[in-house]
Image 1 (cartoon, one colour):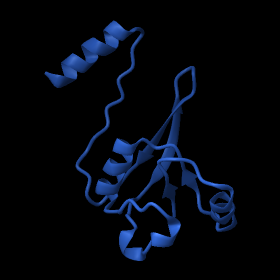
Image 2: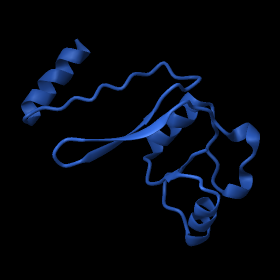
Image 3: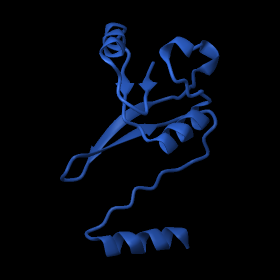
Image 4: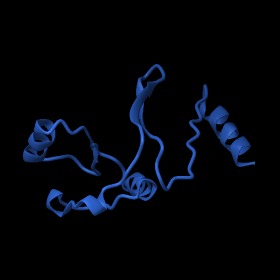
Length: 107
């Protein structure tokens, strides 16, 4: 019930996705796309024609969070079958505070 793409979609793909009421996320980084595929049990396919039910992944909830004064966005995918990962969002008043928080987490 969701399509995730490393690049954009052409006009025909956009039309088909919209026509079938299928939400899509585009411009996802390559490393993030691979991690999502591993976590959901999905396979990365280069073309729509190559999609089969066996290549689809599964996840519970997918939501977009907006935060901060600049309305930064983050996609959250929860309840993945193969995931043992946790995301920690570190923010601070300046880069020194962020760096110190990262060191604390690492320790």
